[in-house]
Length: 281
Length: 251
Image 1: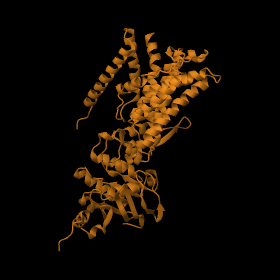
Image 2: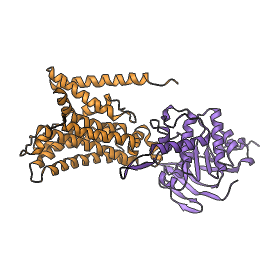
Image 3: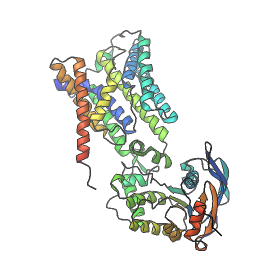
Image 4: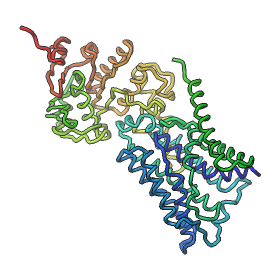
């Protein structure tokens, strides 16, 4: 029963970790994913209460996050501002927008199938985790079997080499931030469905957890190294940890302490393993 | 054997802010000719190479290929004209495999399930093997990451990339720097082999012995100005050094 709970609760973080992995592989970072989750939650919940229907609300949520993903990507790739600064700005903008749009209050809508879909199971596996698993498979295929995947690793390793070879580096970088935004929207929609309401601070802290999951999963902060599959597994592990700490009676701040400690320990372990696996020269 | 003039530059100028990197350089390159580009640091060699490879744009001047004026606005345009460049820093991606590096910027895709493009790894591996074997440098696998290769092997990968699409002109920026003597000799053989195939070569190097062993003609740049352009057999390394460093004879 608790395993199902862990899978259900890890879904949002797992998909955010996938997006963050792609961004970090290009030597970037996306601090805006948490606030994008909140904004998407408010946009989707707000529109669910309108006459346009569930699919329109979902589509609008995805479009909103995609817009901010492209916004960050274009500024990072074209104007060449540091990803940390750009996505920090996007984070503040979208977090503020989320609060402005709902007036700081939680949004509800008339009950429909969207309220319950997140709590359904498919052969015992939460529907949300099934959806995330589909994204996981698609990302694995993208990374290992397409030019896009090779160029993501290439950008993180030697961006100039790709540029000199005629690769459209700016386009690929923008696409990566777009994907990260899209994944944040999926996480936002899933969380909105799960809690059956739109919450302007629901995504708070998710950017930290996603970065931690990617880093613990072996994605290098300097880009070009790592496998998003491990970031995905790491996201599930982090959820297990917080879940376990919760069951032991630790409150959310203590759970964050736990994640922080795991992050530092995980990075330390990565460094040790990297040294051990270095070939003799 | 060299033929007609394949590449011609007229009055090429390039500045970086207040610094004039090239001050109106003229040059020619014949079909099948090996032209050595020599000069001290900041002579303008790399700037000229970057202009020809499309990495940067010229400020003034004209470039002709087969007597037709061409505008090389980006690396893809340069490649489309049959110009391939092997850069000084190899321009390789350490975290990618040999075959991915060989095909960098031109990865081969195949369609599956009615049109979804995926990498044709087998084809790229086979093609990479063929090109690398032509150069005679030992490789155990093209699936290895470039970070695991020796200096000579890395240079071979960079040259293989240039060779893959039947270039008309290959530009080699310091291809022998940092290599062992045996590897230097191998690279020189490869350059001479280009000539046999009718490929024109622009070859930048600080190693005068490599230059005199391979080049048909030597062009010396100093502070963005062409100060010498002579046939290899009409000059000595002493002449080249004097022009490179503006050494005057005491009479």
